[in-house]
Length: 301
Image 1 (cartoon, rainbow, N blue to C red):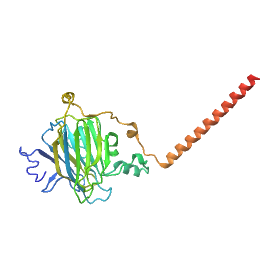
Image 2: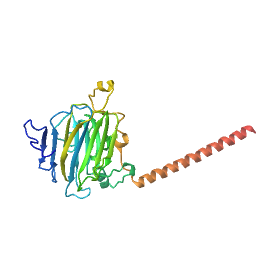
Image 3: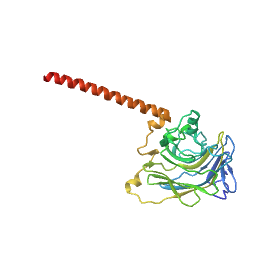
Image 4: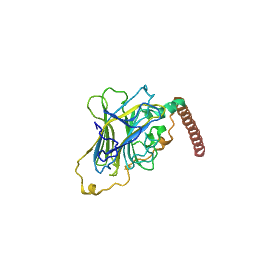
């Protein structure tokens, strides 16, 4: 938090490291400027040994791009590895831990617009969009699908170019992951994600990262604060040790992995031919029944 004295310095007086194009000013830490092909990150040097915790992030996303001509957003991390650049909002893919993505550009929607396909309402997201992902090192973040196949939850959050402060809070309490946002300038938290059965090991690191490509924005971290949460636990809960990140009852759904948005014309023909098929089967059934009935009458006489 301000005044960011010694941030990123090699001395032991700070607990934060900077990476890439990250720039420190008197008012914010800028992960990426509003320029193309930039990448930056900030990572804590001290592993988190808290069983239950809360992290509050005060941030600002702004730039010259209008509406959806901006990108790509930034990520907040609680992961095993730190200071490793990569393709997921400026950090490595196939990570261990938790990633929260404040995504400002709808890659999937734009790709399907190019192919002249339309979304069905049940699959459409409104951007900017916040989503969470828990990874055991085996899942790859699908950037072209905006992380949809591996997301455990999410919500729309219109956070760009606002004149008031914007906040997100991540709370991990008794294996429950909760994400809330305060982005309307009313000092009120609103629910975004609430997922039980989340297991995250202790000893991971907090960080934030961002990257720009052809589309750009300023991605600023104003503060990142971690709090310990105190809660009563049973002896069994106290003894439970988590080694691998996981989410109960979560699996990659086939419809998410293979999903192709369906046009209205395609849907019409599917319904039309289905009705014809039902009618044909009904006619065949009536003919078979009539023949069986006639044969039964002949045997009777």
